[in-house]
Amino acid sequence: MLREPHSVSTRLSRRAKLGALGILALTASVQAAPPHLTFEQLTVTSGAGCASYYPSMSNTGNKVAFTSFCDLVGQNADQNAEVFVMSTNGTNIHQLTTTVSNPGAFGAQNVGINKNGTVVVFSSDGDLVAGGNADGNFEIFTINADGTGIAQLTHTTGGTPDNFGGCSHPSFSPNGSQILFASDRDLISGQNSDNNQEMFLMNADGSGLVQITHTTGGFGNWDGSMANGNRVLFSSDRDLVPPGNPAGFYQLFTINVDGTGVQQLTHTSDGDNVAPRWTANGKTLTFRSDADLVGNNPDHSLEVFRMDTDGTHLVQVTSTSTGFTAPWDISSNAKIIAIESDQDLVPGSNADHNGEIFLAKLVP
Image 1 (cartoon, rainbow, N blue to C red):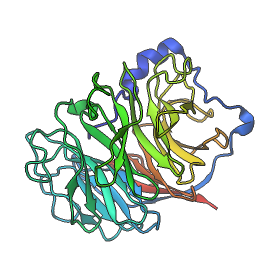
Image 2: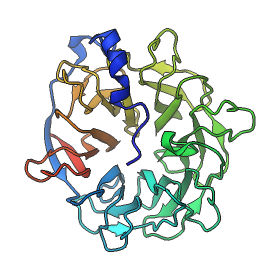
Image 3: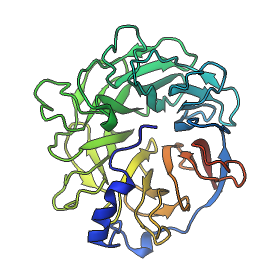
Image 4: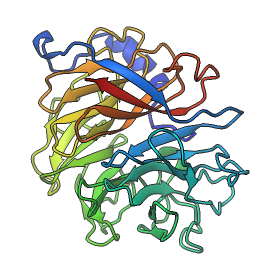
């Protein structure tokens, strides 16, 4: 699978120099007790190269969109990464895309479903609308949840696929009218001439494009989520609120859609905080981190965390020892988290450590 940039392994030398000093800018008094959880495994797959990723839930709670390399319904014999939808109990799986690939193409990734469960947005380097993506750059597409009406919303050139070249990580605004995404392309001529990863916003039909962030150096900004009130949550390795991130770890930030009002939510020096997802009201978020934020992650594995946007009620949701675990969506009531993981979170259900889709449900 095409993994997120600057993995844990690339951070080891920096971590050795800095030491285990990472903290979220919190005190023990605002950390919450570990939540009571139940895990439900929605996909059960096996075989070399077969794995599922990037789950996103509809607000009605009846659909999960995701990508998979697996031949789940007999329509993906070449095991490209394709877009699927299923019920939240793991049944009624439908394949939405069939990738017409360029040589060496990856397929579909970074899936988001709108909250009424009718439209899916995703990134792909496939030529899904014949002739629209002949160069195999990553572009933003939408498709109806019944598999009809596929549309290519961005048309770019250049980019480096191993580093999410082109356009990636799209997600819908809470009302579904806009799409937030990241790109290293100069989509509005002259605003991103250095080809840094920046945050962009457009209408759900591809019109009304605006660039939200403007940075230089490093990797940049990516992997965002929106809340009501026109505010964006995203991760960045830039020092956007100097000197809040001098070491260049990935931190979580919020920003207004007009580019003003940047706030830094995390301050770590022993790991990265990425994959942030917001509830629609902007009060609660989940993210993935390999930092030891609350003293429960001394091995610096990739774990799921949840906290309120003001930094209170920080909890570590998962505790694993190897592999990866990432949250890609959170329900509006903050009680359900859609997770991808190669861990055996429901003991005995993922003994082969395939990448599978899970729901973490907080009780009560």
